Length: 60
Image 1 (tube, rainbow, N blue to C red):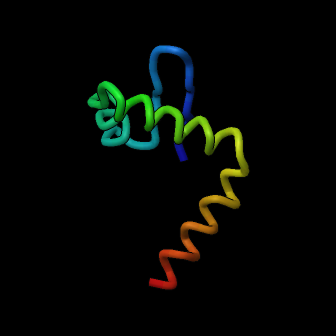
Image 2 (cartoon, one colour):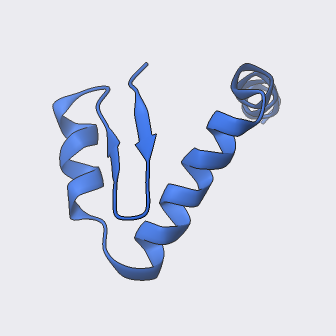
C-alpha cells in the first residue's frame, strides 16, 4: 500500500511508479474528485471499505 498526502494543491500516491505517473496525469475536476475520494478513504475506515468492495467483487 502506498501513502496518500492530501493538501490544497495536490495528491501524491506512491504504491508503484505507475500509480505515481497516474496521479501526476490527473487534471481539473477529475483530479479534485480523485483527491477527495482518497481523503475520504483516509478519514473513514479504509480496511472496512476495502473489505466491502472485495466482498462485492467476489460475488460478481
